[in-house]
Image 1 (cartoon, helix red, strand yellow):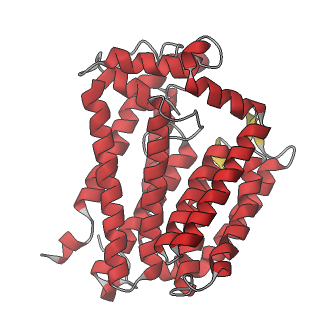
Image 2 (tube, rainbow, N blue to C red):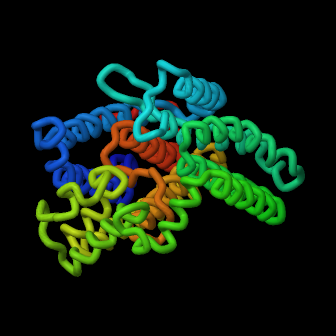
Length: 379
């Protein structure tokens, strides 16, 4: 095999590229009506998403030229910087509030959703921690608990926004990484039980979370109130049938389904492209997750613990977030404000996911060509 063929994992590149391309098309289709209503420019959201995609690809190319050793060296500082950003979001006059949630930092013409940044920084930090304490986690409970205590500060700040969905994704990903890094099964099970208890408590103490859970259990009990979003999403799936109503022909995006181009983009895709299109997207995510985990396994076998944990973490994070988003759209999970990676409208999410995928490619490159680990990518 030639050296040029070793540069990129073709299956991963195809899956990521296809998801990004389909996402751009669906954002264009799902947002035309609302964009025309709000801005008078039918392609307003599509144009912004296209710009974010280009920016994300530029960042990705830059990230691929940086050695993993550099990311490992600065991983703790990146997490600290992320925590500072989470604090700034909560400062009156700095953070921006939308729909009752304060999750964004205004940066000129764009808004940075810090939770997306924290997801990647947490993975880098845990990967570095597992590299430094390799082989020690199975002997000490405190070695497992220590990074969770630090990430608990970030989780508390996310809870104040509030952003329960991001907390679930981050903590689930971190627990999985710790388990893959050597944490004992009994310790892992105990942590899962504790986390489950805490999440249950958070649901019970917040009336809106409990109401959201109740509407999920029976959305048709109040189809024009708390269950409106979910019932409209299910109607979109029903209209899609096998082959869909045709690209651009969705009825639900005509102000029936809220957040049609963001959190509920998958419902519009199912309506317009049918079961075939919906299953194709799931298949692409399956290929993406499979290649990410395979890259992680190859790195682990070659002794690159940091690179392996990055690949595992990114695969678990994006796979879990995709499962949650798709599950919410299908009525299988309670509503969460999580985007569909590479597809939903949102600049912060798209750029960060592009950077994460670039790190996957970098892990793959350094695993296959360790002698090139310190060299820049050749054109």
